[in-house]
Image (tube, rainbow, N blue to C red; front, top):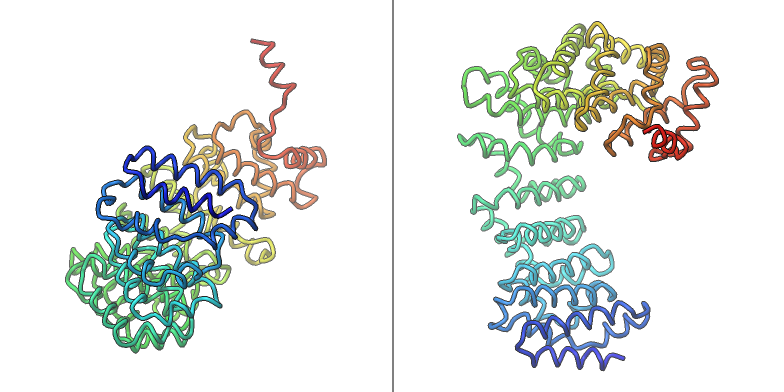
Amino acid sequence: MTEWYQAKISRLCELNNVEEKRDVLTDIKIKFGSLSNRDAEQVARCLDYGPLYSQLTSSDRYDDREVIEQICDVLTILFSVLEPGEIYQRYLVEVSTLLTNPNANVRLLMLREFQRTASHPQRIYQLLEDTNLLISIINRIGDNDLTVAECAMNIVKKIGGDPNGLHILYKGELLRTFARLLQKDTISFRVYEVIVDIAKTSRIALEVSAQSGFLNSLISMLDDEDVLLQLNALEILTQLAIFEEGLSYLEQQEVLSKLVQKIAQANENSLSNLLIPGLMKFFGNVARHWPNELFSKYPVIISALFEVIDGGDQTLLGPALDTLGFVSVSVEGKYALQALGDAMIGALKTIGEVVQRMPTTLRIRGLNNLTLILDVKRPEQDNRILSLTKLWFDSLCDDSLGMIVAICRQPFADIRQAGLEVLAVVGSQVWGQEYISTYPGLVEFLLDRSVEMFKDCIDVKFEVVKRLSQAEQHVFDAETMQKFKQFVNEGPYFVDINREIAIEGAL
């Protein structure tokens, strides 16, 4: 069985005509695809891949991108039926050489095979024992092709997540390879992303990463005069801050105090204003996981947040609303905001203004964050939290539900969907169900499938009705509840054939 494939590969190597080469590769792919799993594995295991590797490395083939791409496709299919690491064991020298091939498809082929090995707990040791290979993989983080670089990053993250791999990465020549890559401004943040992703996997990983000195190097960028560098550093450090030990480490390094000071001094420097969105995002993510700690230790952050929201500066308002949404995700965060008194009520009035009068992108952002602010998962609902979300909803404007319903009737898919998502959250809470039950024409609008033209809106409206079908017994009458349940049973894309025929007959 293998002989046919080997003969085809030999024929491929003899040909010079590009079209004929493509035909041979297509034949191989089609025939291999028709094999049973057992036969496919046997063929893939018995094949001599040397001639195909030669085709990838022959100097006169570099310009023949389509053929090389097709060879990579065939090899990907063949490799996939083998055990991770099997190809590496058989062709140690060849696969390592292919990592530096001029063609990105070839480099990616090999890296994806190494990624399979790195993802296999019993096979990863093969990579850990080959220092030269690890150096080659780390160097690919600096690849000109972003897809190749991201694949290399994922492999190194996997290796760093292994207890043995963690210690190997930050020693000797591998450590020096990281350091050399960090000297290149265009790719340094790829390396920092890998380092932080490894650091947040465990307390030990954080300690080892910190000992390498790379985390301190990243933190020092917060003092750089280049605001863009500071923003990039903030983006990556945010990932460390949402890991409990990571947040503690950043506090020990006085990073949070330093960032709080930047917010406090924002008005003193026009360039500092450029940092505010990144700082808001950073603290918003921290507050999403540790709201009480943030509120108690760094109250200036929350004060600054509400100042930005009240200030109405559209360039800062979007990130500030996102931060408020992050803080509000958990019930704990909602209670922390409630404890601030009237500040949250004022912010909600601002959101009410935003979703009615601001540019569309900001209106949608406001609605999306309003969804987070009001959302409470069913198991967490009790009288206390429902009273709070009702108060917040009522604070938006004089007729909050009327405002949301008007948005849900907009003819534009993006803002209509955002409005329906708010309505879904409202419809999942008893007070919201009561509001919907008494709002003129709203139930009929929700049950009318003919008014929705956009798939995303159809899906969200279905979710609204589904939540209403689970409403408390006293809210809707029996007939309405039956209509809700029938709507849900029919599914989101149901079409009433009889109604369609009646409409056509009337035309």
